[in-house]
Length: 263
Image 1 (cartoon, rainbow, N blue to C red):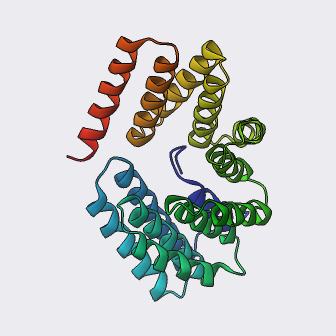
Image 2: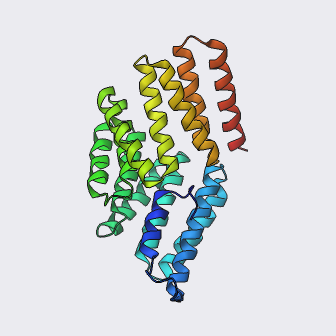
Image 3: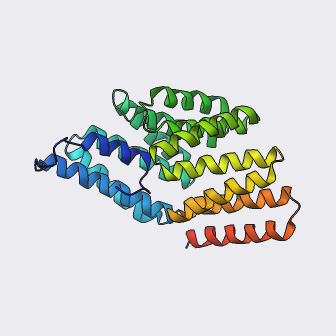
């Protein structure tokens, strides 16, 4: 797996480990790896804006998982399909998929990710209280490796609720957890969140340092949607610094990134 792989695939990697590299994989294990690979390719396609390719790959992954009664593979794929639908602006489809995933994930390690996706859907719908409830459930169900991801979401919700102090505390904790776990994309999320908070607190130089660090990480991981978010956050900061020319330049660059995503 690459560093760009999202947390579900990291978790699946732990599940797939046999503990003995000299033992040849069984046909079932080979199919599990194929399902994981299809999901990873779909995530990479989605990150670049190729949603039709991503959807096709996820359909194939789910077909293979269902044919083998592979519950973990089905839940992982359902969640990625839900994410794809949410980001494509289809909340009804996203909700159906996440509810299926929640039902199947009740007794599995993927429950925390299913709860997190449900929280993100509630947040997108403006139901912040429900989003916080599901994000808290995700955090409580998290066995450890993805703690920083859970904390990032709780920080985002706290910021949306206007609690900058709590958002900063959660972001700092998330940054430490993500750095320890080597989750570069989540670390960039923590840096971006902290940068936005520090900017609103008036710590403008520190905010710029954090946002530039997030941008560099997202460039290294080649994630256009996150690069655009970093540039937009830098534009907001430039506005706070009354640097109108820089603000417009950052916005221009962000628009260019998003424009090429849609092509």
